[in-house]
Length: 420
Ligand SMILES: *[C@@H]1O[C@H](CO)[C@@H](O)[C@H](O)[C@H]1NC(C)=O
Ligand SMILES: *[C@@H]1O[C@H](CO)[C@@H](O)[C@H](O)[C@H]1NC(C)=O
Ligand SMILES: *[C@@H]1O[C@H](CO)[C@@H](O)[C@H](O)[C@H]1NC(C)=O
Ligand SMILES: *[C@@H]1O[C@H](CO)[C@@H](O)[C@H](O)[C@H]1NC(C)=O
Ligand SMILES: *[C@@H]1O[C@H](CO)[C@@H](O)[C@H](O)[C@H]1NC(C)=O
Ligand SMILES: *[C@@H]1O[C@H](CO)[C@@H](O)[C@H](O)[C@H]1NC(C)=O
Image (cartoon, protein in one colour):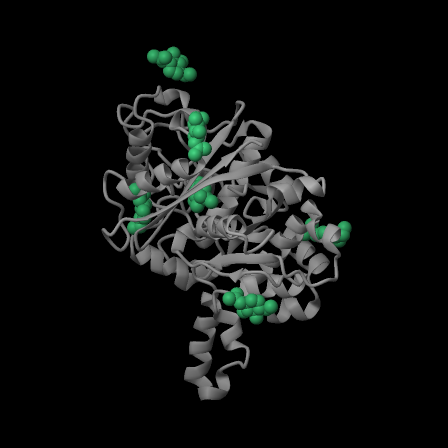
């Protein structure tokens, strides 16, 4: 079977703009969760993972034209800057002829909720001014595939142009589908990832009304996201984007590209259970992970690290722990590292899958296992038996790492990355 490898990384996140910056902060145990501005004052949750504005202004003015900053929706701008960093990193297009059109390179960039701010503003403008209140750019500013559209135009990517929207599993499905396009011969390389620019009171208000978010830490934002901790009380919403360059292995080797990791396996499943809650035993998650291992022909015995989906909700973290316990039955669970980087950045919704995939790849590359922030005490040590990498980075050589993503609507996905 065609092997698919990762040759470029790009990131816009609450821990910073740029892979190096954000990774160093993550490993140092820093948090990107902050108090939100006065637009959010009426809400029960007033904390979030916000992209640092100074770093974003600098990166956007260095990488985007003034007209793009004005007209392109923010979620697509995040993807464009992350894609630029990944493309710079991999030198894929420099090697292929920078200004050419590339029929054998495609783009797969999804988002969860696209552009809530534009919808809200347009409703207000319509109520005040009627149809004249609607911008001619309204439609291209709200449709979910515009991250893929803008990135493909910027780089002349004429291969598959794909956009997934599977709630919080979006990033994992974007990357998994892109890897499959390469395996099936649709493209030699894919620019793949996901993005979310969701920091709007209506978006956060919706999750607050669904009782999904943390409301007890408005005065101590960095403590609000606490995956697996006994005091966890809901997720913290965050924004950002990660983009990877995926490439056929032989193609990467032929041009001497640096290889970060191999995409070894990809599993997908549905819960067919409930609109927001997982089944207690995490059965959908279990089947997605099993399938990723089967596709890769890798036994669960070889997994050293799992970047958990764990969003810091009571039910979700417990269900994922149950699924992992079943997957690794027979192994010494305290010997397997399972961490959730959401303690540091919050839950990036559609952006989560790709950002955390990127962190998983960095863990494989460096052997640094990013910590689960705010994990002071497990809710039940007799049930939560893994090494959850509490609070501080650990170091360990990792051969294979699993990365899980699950979303509202009952969608589950898992990616397996391996060292090359
Ligand atoms: C990509 O490289 C160019 C040229 O070196 C640089 O100006 C730009 O800032 C880089 N973009 C990112 C996002 O790293
Ligand atoms: C594909 O890219 C074009 C620009 O080249 C864009 O207009 C279109 O929306 C994209 N299609 C999809 C499905 O993303
Ligand atoms: C799967 O891995 C096993 C053990 O490493 C090997 O014997 C077998 O040939 C592999 N199967 C496939 C289809 O590659
Ligand atoms: C399980 O793994 C832990 C951590 O590596 C180790 O301390 C412990 O001795 C192991 N237990 C058994 C029964 O092997
Ligand atoms: C990786 O794990 C994170 C959980 O920390 C999850 O949210 C994300 O969706 C996963 N990404 C992939 C590609 O599976
Ligand atoms: C599978 O997807 C569902 C969507 O309802 C998600 O909530 C759940 O967390 C996933 N399954 C598990 C066991 O985590």
